[in-house]
Image: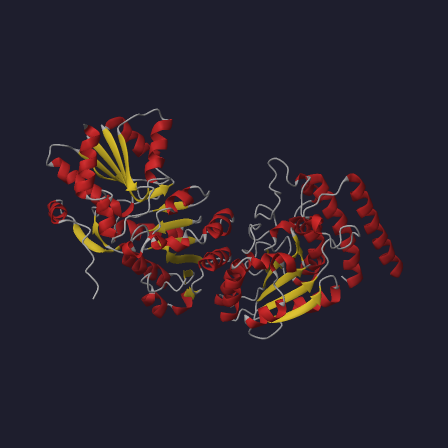
Length: 277
Length: 332
């Protein structure tokens, strides 16, 4: 699949994500749109996992530590065929396992997440298990930049470098916004790259919406013998003009009119991409 | 020089133990460590995860003999539980081992979400639990753990009374396909069971029969209940003693039977009286419409009295003498 193919797919995935949030009446719109391109690359280019191999012990593991962006994950998993797209109509509905954060009831989900600061420690356990078994699988997690205020991440950051887990990659969705506003105002955490390097990680900084850059960054460790941290610079609300870089869209649900406008913008972006082709 | 730790048993209690034929074993902590190492030698998938706690957990020999099967995470209990969960999710039989006070308070959210909600077959071991650290103070006591863990779905909770129950609990946990929590102390324990005793998670063990008072005790308080029953026998009372090693699932039938057949019930636990074994038993009885004189013996809802574990036990009546007195009061 070419970069262009993935860009076109991203338009469809963003539309699907917005529709399911409106249908659910709840969701994390801004963060889902910011990390969607990362998930698109992971599941269509990087991860050695498919609906057919999801129970294989040798599959790559992906744990979404920023579990609140579940709508982006579900849109990508449905597109990859892990479950029927029709299932997404039940998100947040009575007796549906498609609750508002990832659960292992859903095919393709490795661990139940949603409380922040949990994904990285879990992934260290997974990466250690791979090393113990001399297994080739890789372990990935996605963290929010606001999530980094949880101290458990830094306990885990120490352990990952201590054990030289070069089979582990932590991706930070660096959209610089969280529910209350700019991360720098809520709890400043910059410079992120220096912090992760100081904890013994190899660090890459990429444009989190650039398919070529994401693919290159996710395809090999930053440094031999070290875990990799990819700081993916993203735009919260990416792809919908009135949602971009606006904190209120953290968990804003579009009205009918807003959905219509958002879908129209995504249709237009898709048409422009097709023109380029 | 530090003062010698006071004995958990008065001379009279020791005499009663001898009369009942009880033999002193080793600490349940030591029994756990030996059992885990024995199992791990036969199964390389068993992994111990420690938070600078291999010494406290008596796992130094494990680490020396099986270095590839021990993961040290440093003083980082949240990370310990997350890593234990991740190992279990990838096919390892992981045992997260840390002092009960830190494991079940600092890491509670990881226990709830990473282990129980994610439903991975991990085992958590609360070492030196209850008031084992005695005079080190409340920071080092775990008198909340049964209450908070009872309120989390999908966790088997076992509090063994002696070496036999500890060994059986660890063997059960090693085979379990669901999350398990086991907690115990570090003081030497009398062995309470006959060789033919069977252990089953979720099933209580009756140590002694009788219909005057039923003592329902959990963990390392069970021996004191058994000694009290011996003392009360000398006063003409026949007391039932139940070792309720499984707090969850809780065997309700044995509680209901005691409520129907005995004149009074005394529950005993090394835990706050809020939310532990006693309140669980009361709930079972009340919902079945059984009313019987009933007393929960444990640590009251106050700042725990300073002192060694033996001092604390005696202060709150978790002793042969204290439990006998409580039983007699209930029968008046």
